[in-house]
Structure formats: C-alpha cells, structure tokens
Image (cartoon, rainbow, N blue to C red; front, side, top):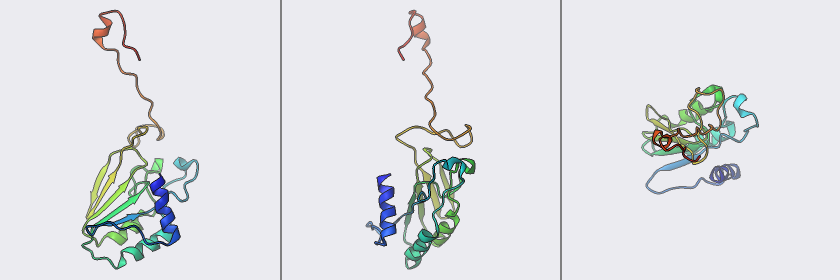
Length: 165
C-alpha cells in the first residue's frame, strides 16, 4: 500500500514517473483515490479524467515497440462487478495502450490469481500474503474466508485421542 500511495503522490506532484532500464516503461495508476467506505456496494473503481489525460500524454510519444507494464490496485478488467472487482473507466486507459506490442497489466486487491489475455494485453492479478478471498461469486460478499478446521485423521481416532487444534 505504501508503494501505491507513493505512485499517487508522484502523479499528483507532476513529477516525471520513475524509469527502469531495458526500455520497459512502467506506469502506475491509482484507482483508489475516491475509495469510500462501503465500496463493495458502491460499484466499480475509477481512474479519473486527470490521470487518464496524464496517461494519454505519457504514452503519446513512445514507440509502439516499447514494452509497457501498467500497475493498479484494483483490476483494470471487470472480474466480478457485483463485488466492485473492476475499474469503470479502464477501457479508456487500455485504449491508449492498444498500439503497443506488449502490455502487461498487474493488480492486487482481490487476493486471487487470475490471468487473461486480450489481444496484446496480458492481465495478471496477484494473490495475497494476508487473508484469502473467495473466488468471484462463490460467497455472498467478498472478504476474509474463515479457515476451515483440519479434519481429524483416522489414525488418531484409533488411539482414542484427537489431534490438537
């Protein structure tokens, strides 16, 4: 989260984005600026006009052969709208990147490993080191899954005791 907030601070300051070697252009978009409590019922995330205009200018002069890596917190493709797992204006951002031969889009938030390829764009969502989330639509709401207790092994019952929990 600290890195994501830093990317937002760089964007808002007007400073040029950090650059990496090997000709890869890294872009960080913050789609949680207007993140409100109760977001699960508030619809999809947004990038916003200001960042989208910045993105359009940022990639305008780049060669179409430049590999692009785009990062955001929430998915830039709609995975499960009912849970807010997507970004409403992501299509506009991705439209600016259509001409590039290799675009990789990375996100977290949903604590799932899901991949998708759409033309020249490869989407990857990341798992989490924290609590697991249910797969899209398999629970009434997203959120931490309760850990199931491990089953008692049959061989422990033969000795008249169960495994400690």
